[in-house]
Every structure is written in C-alpha cells, then in structure tokens.
Image 1 (cartoon, rainbow, N blue to C red):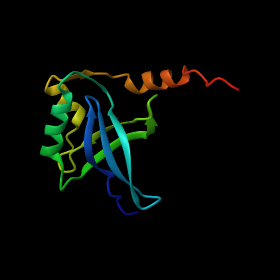
Image 2: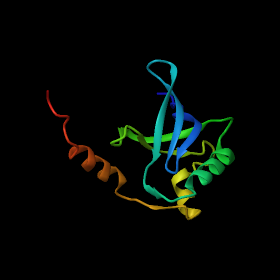
Image 3: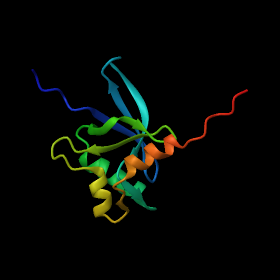
Amino acid sequence: MEDQEPLTASVARVTRKDTVLVRVLNPLLQSMVSTYLTVEGVWCDDGADAAIIDWVELHSDYGRLGLRTFGWVRDEWGRLLGDLADLQTGELLSDYLIEQKVASARPHHYMETMLNLAHAKEPDEC
C-alpha cells in the first residue's frame, strides 16, 4: 500500500482569536472547499489572532499546512475542531500559541464540544 499524502490546507484568513478560515482539498469531490477551523485543545486569549498570523507566515510551505482533525467533528457553531501543522517539522499551531502565552491548554475541548452538542436544544416543532 502506498503512503497517502497528508491532508493539507491553506489559511485564507484569521477571523477570530481562535478561528481561521481554511481551504482544503476534498478528496471525494477533487475540489477545494472552505471551512472555519477552531484551534482544538486551547483557550485563546486576546492577541492570539496576531500570533496565528505570525505562525502561519513562518510555517506554511508554499501556502500549505498540514491539517489535523479527529473525525471531522464540528463545534456548536459549525466550526471544524482541528489543528494546523508544519508539513516539514510537524510543529503544531496549538503548541506555539501556548508557548507564546496567548493561549492556555484545554485538554477536554473535544469532550466539552460533544457535551455541548448533546445538550443543545432541539428546534421547536411547528
């Protein structure tokens, strides 16, 4: 079996202190799709958006970054939970944000998201 290419993404823009708009190749459709990504595993503070921009400029390989996500889970606002990685070194955006002290660790982010989705109210029936 051949090794698969890692899933890559390019950052279109940073929209919030913890959210980026990424463009990803959809392998089934063989076309680019845009989705919002929230950085999984961290609580971002004010100023994290500038740190994200700095990290992306430093680590993107011809505009491409590795996209890491677990099961394409989305939060209650429809944002994909995931992380961005340097394709060559494997360095993660979330680790950088913690290192720069613009974010703190959020180890249960995935579980919190699942609980929020489970407790979300159903829309009122007509």
